[in-house]
Image (cartoon, rainbow, N blue to C red; front, side, top):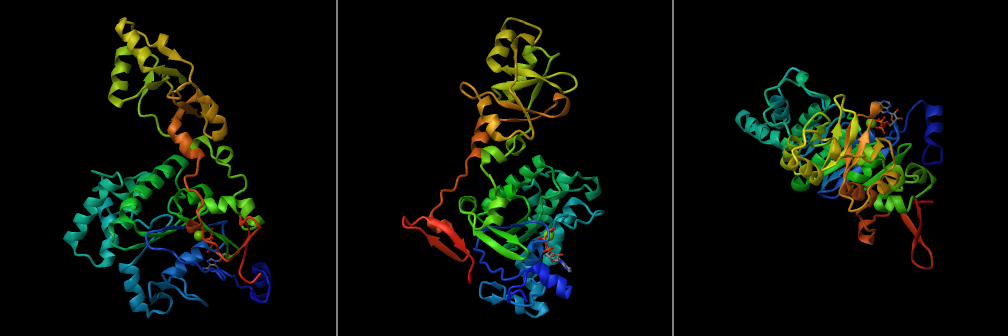
Length: 400
Ligand SMILES: Nc1ncnc2c1ncn2[C@@H]1O[C@H](COP(=O)(O)OP(=O)(O)OP(=O)(O)O)[C@@H](O)[C@H]1O
Ligand SMILES: [Mg+2]
């Protein structure tokens, strides 16, 4: 019915059956992070689960290299899932009453790795995800972010070369989420697994994806590099999806903020503060009152001058701090970097409490996309029209 032109909604109305995914063909290259993005119900999980055979296909094929995964006998398919294709779910399916180490080792257990080896491997993975010394803890004792790390570690500990990740970070708040994305990217940078990553967060898709497929109603409406998708939205749907992803406008302060390494308090003396700044290698430090409300910003030189003059109070070194809210667009953050731009900008929340800070380098990185659109890097999902100058002007779906 879909092929004869009926929409997903019409098919559903007439038959009571849903089209999970339709005509959604794509290749994933070795070592690539391939992102599938789309609104809720667009078919992302359906496809992901089709790749490793958790969803049986009614039509179409899935190849792993030359092997036809979609037609493997179940025994062979299970072996492929154990050894080659790992899956990370949104809530990771951790075993709550087992320890962190046992949970990490669990993936290996399924792979059939002997006890001693999997213990060792699990131990080795702990520091990679920042859980050193936490191996003995029970899952119930961990924060959300720590659980997420355990889940990631579990997937990373295995030797599976392909990882299917279904919204692995979506339960996390923006800050931890960015930490996890960075962690994932740095580990992936070394491991070079092939990853199919599902998300409904555009920022996440553009940050992580080498290529991104945008889905709507079970179909892929565009596929290409982040740059390509932003520059050449295939149709109105994609356009609306990426609408105004002018980073300066759409990206918010929280997307580039980091936690303050150190802060100073109004009741502290210059010598103490200076020492802390030196230890942390800071040129500036934010000053808070006892309730963590932002009071101002100190520069190391000024603090040192007070310390030399044996002043007891920090007050004379405190300048007004440039500050924004979490949801302030980057466009409005940029002008706050004045002069040499070394001073950070504070991100404050309710009651002027310091939530984080932005340094200029991170801001610039957040404002620019690094990828230049070369033809090799852009993949046209189906057809591309060009105008007289050879510029791409429109992308068509096959058959249109
Ligand atoms: N087990 C199921 N039985 C019937 N219909 C299903 C089942 N799983 C998914 N669907 C339907 O298939 C379509 C695609 O769902 P899918 O779970 O793939 O979406 P999704 O893009 O992963 O959404 P989300 O972002 O909410 O996870 C939806 O219309 C959904 O209602
Ligand atoms: Mg889903």
